[in-house]
Image (tube, rainbow, N blue to C red; front, side):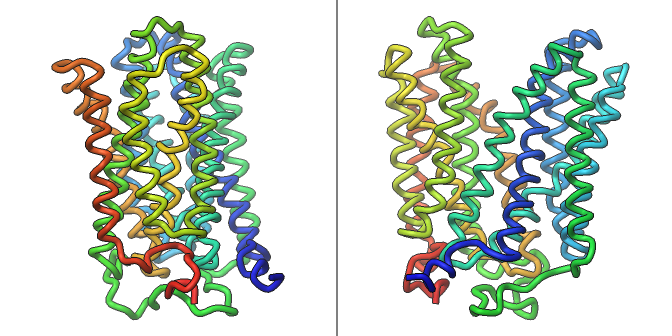
Length: 413
C-alpha cells in the first residue's frame, strides 16, 4: 500500500512543478478575469461606449487565443520554462503600461499585447504537468492544475474591484500586473539552472512515444483520438460559455435582482472548481470515458432542468451541482489529450486543442444568441441540452486505454 501511494502522490520535482504551474495558472486566469471587472471603470475614465469597452476584452482574448500555437511551438525549440515564465512576466508588465493608457487606441493595443503574453500558459503548462505525472495520478494532477485557475478567477477579480474602489482602476491594474510580473520573474529565477526539457521519472516506462516517432511537427501521435477529444472539448467549452452567458438573463427574467444573481454565480463558480478537482481524481479511479459520459449526461439534464427550478434557495443548491457538471469534464478531457500527443512536442498539440476550444467559447454565445432572438430563452437551454448529448456519443469512440489511470490499462503498466 505504501509503495502504491508513493507512485500516485506527487513528490520531488513533479510536486514542485505542479505547485509552480498551479501558482502561474492562478495568476494567468486571475489577471484575465480582473480586466473584465475593471472594464466599467476604464470605460468611465476614458469615455468609452459599451462596444468599445467590450472590444478591450475581445482583443485581449483574441490575442491570447491566436498566440497559443506559436508560443507552444517556440517552447519546443527553446526552454519551456523560459517561455512559460516569460509569458506571465510579459502579461503582468503589459498591464502596467495599460494602466497608464490615456486613449482608447492605447488601451486596445496594450490589452492585446497582454493577451499575447497570456497565450503561453495553457498549452505549455498542461503538457508539462501531464507528462511529469504518473499515468495513474495524471487526472488528479490536471484536476489540481485546473482548480488553481478557478481560485484565480475568484480571488483576483475581487481584489481588483476592491482596489479600484479604494485607489482607482489604474492603481488596481498596475498593482496586480506588477505582482503577476514578479511571480513570472520568480519562476524564471527558480528554473534558471534547468535544461531545456526534462524526462519522465526513471522508475517507470514512459507512456508516450519518443521524439523519433511519427508524431509529426504538431506532436500528435494518435490523430483520430486527438480529433475526437478536441471535438469533445470544443462542444463542451462552447456549451459552458453559452450557459454562463444566458443564465443571468434567465435569472433576471424570473425577477431576481443583481445581488441575488451575483451570489448565485459565485456559488456556481465554487461548484465548478470543486467539479474540476473531483473529476480529476475520478478520472484516475474509473477512466476518462466514464467521467466524460456521466458528467455530460448530468450537464445535459441540468441545463434543461434549470428551466423549472424556482426560488433562490433551490437555485443555489442546483447551480452548485450544475457548475460541477459544467466544469468537471474539462479535467478528464485535458488528461485525455496527454494520451494523444508526443511528450517532446506535446505543447503544440495542446496549443491546437486550446486554440480550438477558446475559439468555440468565443463563438458559441453569438450563435446561441440568434436562437434566443428567434425562439426565446427556453429554446436556448433546450438546444444546449440536446447538443451536449453529442459528447457521450463521441466519447464512445475514444480507445479504452485513453483513460488517465485506470489500473491495468497500458498507460498504467
